[in-house]
Amino acid sequence: MNYSALGFGRNLATLLIAIVAIPAFAVEPATERSPSRTEVKAEEAINFSLLDYKGRYYELRRSEAKVVVLFFTSFSCPIARQSTPKLKSLRTDFGNKGVELWLINSCTADDPDDSMIELMMSRKRSLVPDAAFADIEAVKVEMLKGLVGGLPILRDEHQLVARRFGVNRTCEVIAIDTKSSKIIYRGAIDDQSSEGSQKPAALTNYIANALNEFLAGKAVANPTTKAHGCRITFQTEDPKELISYSKEIAPLLQKNCVGCHSPGQIGPFAMSSYKKVKGWSAMIEEVVLDRRMPPWHADPHYGKFANDRALTSSESHTLLNWIEQGCPRGEGEDPLTNASPPVVEWTLGKPDYIVPIPKEQKIPATGTMKYIYLDSDFAMPEDGWVRAAVCRPGNPTVVHHIIVRALYPKGYKDAPSEAYLFTTWVPGLAAAEFPEGTGMYLPKGSRFNFELHYTTMGEATTDRSEVGLYLAKETPQRRLEVRASDLRDFAIKPGDKNAEHFSMYCFKKDAVIYDLSPHMHFRGSWFKFQLLHPNGKRETLLSVPHYDFNWQTSYRLAEPKRVSAGTWMLCTGAHNNSASNPFNPDATKTVTWGLQSWDEMFMGFMTVADDLPVSSLKSLPKKSMNGGAE
Image (cartoon, rainbow, N blue to C red; front, side, top):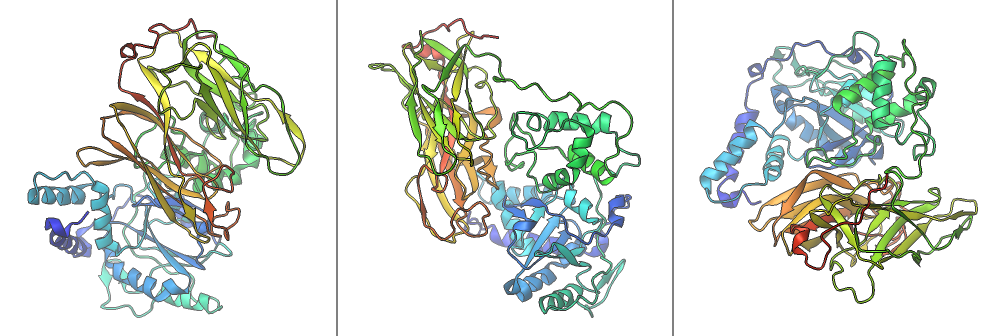
């Protein structure tokens, strides 16, 4: 967005100068008690991951810098804003010496979305009244550039990072040796400021001295000083009493974790008792802090999703505080004993029809297997609507993915023109019914084609996967299809950390979007779905800043999205083909489109229904088969 062309750049600059010029005494620091964690000065730095205000992903242990310097900031704290020139100087002096500088905002009530953003938007509207100023994110990014000169600001909205590092004031600096994960310095930038006073200039530059000494291979002479900044108000206090395992922790784990961490499921261990959970508590703390678990990769600032499995702020604090307390057992029975759900073949109940692959497949102990394509022996006995189609891998240890395509009878004239697939199975994709009011139609005589991808696991074994069909009891309102926006003509150069790509899909009819699923392989880095409306508005439906090939999540919109004909879906994303990507099979290879996991793909799957009632589709039956087996 070109603000200068709108006559807005000068107004923006004036506003930013006015913000930065607010004197220190204009903000009264918070006086609430800081959490007890702040009394602990851990020598080893915990790993964590956060998103910045542009939606980019940062993880401490993935940084390639020698030292990562954290500066805890606030948009409202004048002391933090006055530190901006010092931070820029640090980046200039040490950026080419292997030092990265990350600003972290842990002040939850401190977001540039509010009054400043609205003021900027209103000024733009007054300048160009008829223009569509819908891109608030662009305004926010422009404002952040003026405030911090392009330095990354990471959002610690759950305050997990501040709490675990024991930070209770802005302007505290923590310098971390990434090789050893040790904190080499923490405290103030320099000695210029103290409570209620400020020297004309700093006499001692603490962090600069510490970095120079460390980079020279010397011991840091002054590794700890006192930070001076605005107090951080924490959403919740650390608990004064021990957290109840039976009343708080076990129910939390049952709700969010036990479904996967139970016998026969994908979790590497079963949360079957207090003893088992306590034994894994250090690992649980780590994966919660770096957002690996529960596996949910959508940026929370874009869209709401019905299947969101991320922990809430309250849940995260409760679990981490309990671990910090030493995992007290407390009184009461152990709810996790015998709490694991029984292993069932079909989580939605017994299907109306079970369609296995035609014959058992033999998977060798080693080597690479080509994709296998098999047509089913089964054919639909009569016309009908399907409310769910669930793939069940016969041997999940070797099944990489299953794709099922519907084969319509020869001469059938009403096959959907844009249907990409019928159903699929990939790790992390939970069995679910189609969205309410929708269904997939299968005419009599329809058969199925299975695409099977196996990976060898060091031991010869077999597989006979299958798909279960659940018939609708009533005729759905809309006919559901799986469509895709994909790109196949690309070449990713060796060492490219951010090879960006895009693809576009045009909705030719009014439609309703229900689910979004990005798909790339091991080098996939980030992915975004955006609507380009006919009126020029751009709308982000889903952003996945940290794509993980191990979890092929389908994100179901909490509210289905209606789009008009002529709307485009823009899919943007990137691959990381460098050695910094720990999943990269070969960072020296140019990568192109291909079926194998060491090749790449760029696909945005969508479950969509044209916004037309089934009654208007003359060739389809108006009544369903008598389905819905229990």
